[in-house]
Length: 357
Image (cartoon, rainbow, N blue to C red; front, top):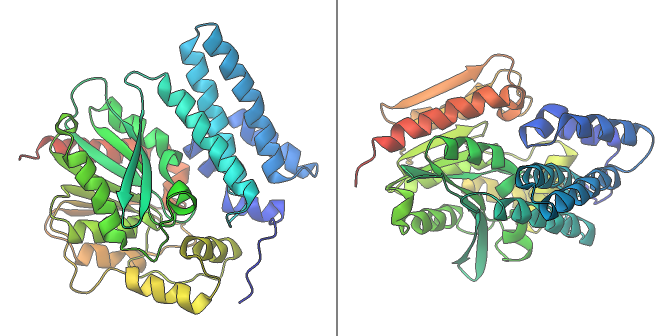
């Protein structure tokens, strides 16, 4: 299996990052159309997305200077979404990817600083490295906290819309970058060969130490991150509720160029046998038991994850376990993002409100 770091053709990038995914992660529709037009005309994906972000950043800076805070936040968010997808064009940690991701983080920081309450940057020691994230708090007292994370390519603040939905319901959110993800990978030095369960439990410890964040802690894992959420919940009795959104219980190296390269970058090797051995290490074990409430989401049109891939999560769970399916749902239910996010946010709000010390 040959692995290279050449930029994929635009049509391959559009398959990996469809408009439904872009909208789910906060890109405005006008930018989706503009990106399509630019890539059809031959502009490289990352250049086109970066140019869109640059225009939003200029608009955001001008609005902030003029005291138009809401407009500034919206423009910084739009820029961040464009930069998020710009960096996804590169799977390996090239200087270009890191530059674009750094600009994404800066745009998130600018938007978060203008919010009330302001977003808090989280940096936690783990093993010999560091983990990163953003803490998003509700306007009033928090009834609990949900730690949100992704899998192969969508990390941390990519899920800002999910965090905002939770905050609107009085639940804090921690947008986490775990092993092999984002800055935890290239700044923190924590790769996917780490103890993944212990890493996400480090985030659990952080929010549990903050009494203002409530006593209950939920985990919301998207794509392969759903596996990490489930296994962490099976290992950490402090987890009060867990949502698995489109994940395999026993991951395997798929025959998709993007998936293979992303998996290689997360582990730090291009050896497919080593990648699969690490996937085997991360899998839900036959002895794992999830004793807290469990919600599993499935898309009937998911080209990557089948119902059978997710059934082991339900088999490992107790009485409070539910699978919610969208028959026409894409991977992680991109095409029903608003409904999905509201459904999951309500589910967490209900369960964390019942959590007692």
